[in-house]
Length: 93
Image (cartoon, rainbow, N blue to C red):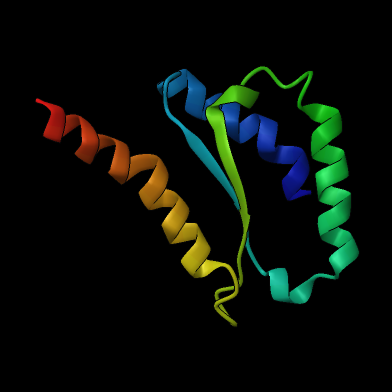
């Protein structure tokens, strides 16, 4: 059900700020099966051509708070997408 609601949530974000970059984070990866991730990837590929705000979604990450799977990768992605570009711009001024 959460996957089906992505369009709704992203649309609400875009109404507030159409320039906001988005990272989709799926949690509880420890409870799923490997085929769940493959199914998600297939479903997302089908939607990318019809999803109006697809270009605002900068990354997809899967994590587990319980086992810490993917947490470090998520924070590294956040750093790369949001912190590093701004530091570079400040240094250029």
